[in-house]
Image (cartoon, rainbow, N blue to C red; front, side, top):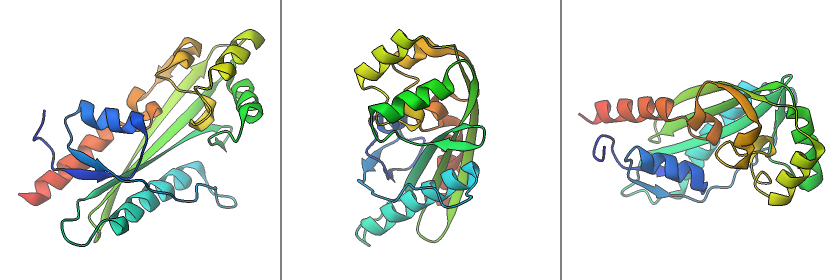
Length: 196
């Protein structure tokens, strides 16, 4: 479906987000963006992912030279248990605590996407509910040893071995991976319409 959407810049180095954009035929350049991902005091999970997606998109806009700037897409994902944000684990021990919290229960995965052209920004939100089976100690240890979840929100990757733990998914598989394609397509489609 190349040519359906205009070229953009992606404010992310995530291989998963890059693969998902490529899957729907979007031409993009990758921008290495650093933003503080710490939640603010009493910040709600929805506000958190919206704020970070926009911060990444705006940082990407500012990183490009003024001539030839492309619209910038930013995204942020949070795993939420009992209204608490589980970000990326700092280390293996914290990843183990997160997996224990997710074991045998449902949690939400929120992914916000923001698209900016400098003057304005548009947003979309994907909310999914993921249910984990009850994990055994051996399963947790084997998964932690794999290192797969150490750089992922909630300490797991749905597209990897953690798929073995997921008994139910309601919502967007690509959203849980980190870039909800339906919502992203809406934003890019709006951008295409404005260019006509």
